[in-house]
Length: 609
Image 1 (cartoon, rainbow, N blue to C red):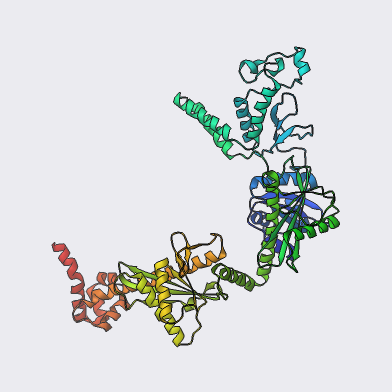
Image 2: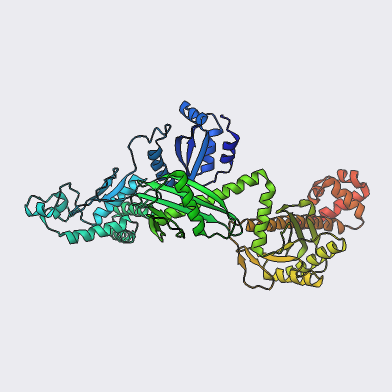
């Protein structure tokens, strides 16, 4: 196992669990390895947590002095980006991808009668390339289906009007099999053939509706004719087409020379992150994220202008086309700004913005690892913001009722301080004034008892109270706080179990918090703890009640005798199974005879029946 430098170890510890591409640098700052990962943190960590079987891998790990990464939406995008970056940097340890092997594309040639075929070579001759396809089987399936849909030529002849006029063409087998429309002998005009090609372009651009309809109709037709094996083959092709992606988000020949600036800014924060991606020859060859701290209320356009000026100066870049979400106010001579609304450019802009966002997350994680209190403050500030509280909710309490068909009603109160459980402050309540299963009245009783006592004893009150239940329980809680004069002094919310709805007093419309929000996770933890604590207490009380009730019904057995028996035997079941002599050793022979006879009288009666 190779020991990492503290700086490198810290970078690895805050890596995201997302797809991406990582780059390793040596001491001179040269890229020595580029790799892809479905999970960046797990993949990069695997290099350093063990000794590898291959010598070359161990040499690579020893040479790593620094690491950078780029996050992408999917593993396929990571694969595409990895290939483009390896070609740009030519790292010494990327042996498998150092040759000219590339992923295949589908090309529509720039000819009078275009051909459509699979290729690994990108040639700038006006032809249109679609891809790349990381799954060759998908590309071949798409080609096969295109040929079944449209009678396109597959020959390599240079078919021109002059070629046709000279009568040099000759119909081939494909024509007789109805796989070609015979352009070589002029059986189809350029205009009609162009209509086929336009439909092919729609399919290759991902507009596969017509293709899928055709496949579905073909499946139904074959099934009606009982040709099930052929129908299954079509179904497999249908499934492949529904999954395939005809264009890469990262690498596209349409994006030959562009620069991208994605920005991330957060309300209430002075930190602004701007990511710059340098795209040349259809490949992302550089990604840099800059961090700014706002001094005034600068707009996003202002921040982009600052970033462009700094990148141009520090990296000596001449911008031509720049993809941005908002055009800067500052004029940049010779620069064309594009604000995309759809397509590859928009996807590239979204990835740039995602990398800027990830830089913010990395900074927060690094700071919180060094000072855990920062994480606590951030979570509390998030709760305060989501619930519109006047102060940080450092002390939160949650209540839950528990009863089974109205028997042994109890309630629980769990306490969180600084967003974590404070178990020494947990309390449970036996309901005293409510008869039958009335959760609303039980909630009102418990809150009244809890906060009346805290005020009497001069104890601090919570900043936030959560009740497990919807509008009914919340209304009961409001009545309790009204009665003891705390309405408005303690924030109160209810959480409904089914859809995780948050209710506020006097508001019939619930709040739906983002499922990934830390606020919701804290509230769910509170609710689950209250439920667990209440159920445990309810079970204990019910068991104790059932045990005592059987001994209570025995004439001549007092409290001391009951306690002695339960202390020794632990349960009524074990007491019933004990021999008379053992019971006599605990409470004496005469009492033992009475208890033994009473406990076994019911069994005797059952046997007689």
